[in-house]
Amino acid sequence: QVQLVESGGGSVQTGGSLRLSCAASGGTFSTYVMGWFRQAPGKEREFVAADNLSGRTYYADSVKGRFTISRDTAKNTGYLQMNNLKPEDTAVYYCAVYKGGRLYERESFGSWGQGTQVTVSS
Image 1 (spheres, one colour):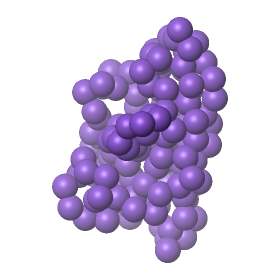
Image 2 (spheres, rainbow, N blue to C red):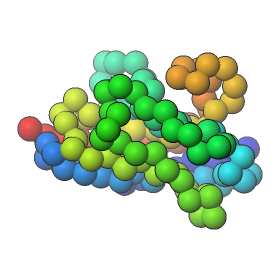
Image 3 (tube, rainbow, N blue to C red):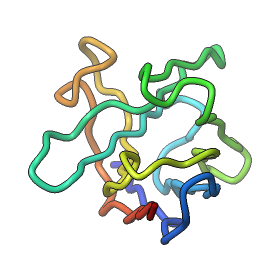
Image 4 (cartoon, rainbow, N blue to C red):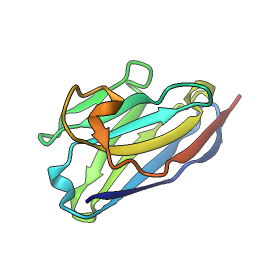
């Protein structure tokens, strides 16, 4: 049973940057497809980014070119580098592992962490 803990959130101004971390325990992180989702108040949790076991990355159109997903398998840690942040990026960010199904769907992921708050002010 993999356990995930997100960290690195905070408050920044428009145009700022943050790097989120997702620390995994249990199992070998290199065997997991990892995804990042976010949820703003009153909205559904939405897909942000994911990678696969071959290192290919996938991004929501809203973050493509600004966010970068990566991982350090030796540290069992995933990362989401967020640059040029916008107020609409404000949300709680979660990491999760792929468990099968369509890649971009929330239901295809599990082992959710507790989330980390990102607030972008204008």
